[in-house]
Length: 75
Image (cartoon, rainbow, N blue to C red; front, side, top):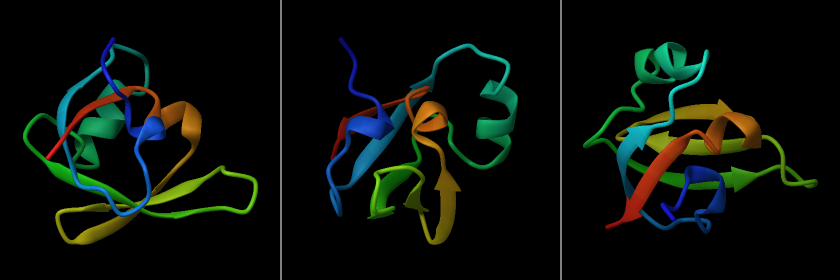
């Protein structure tokens, strides 16, 4: 089973390998979450949702439900 962005540990770099087909897929790819991009989780809200991620130099906030659509592999 492929690891997803919502499962990534804080401050660990990973590479996006794909985005699960969903109605949010075009939005996530427009935000820069497409294969080859390097990402890491910068911050998790006190209850764990949402999260802030670094996408090669810019910060993006995602709900865990959205992050679960982004497949990653550790760098």
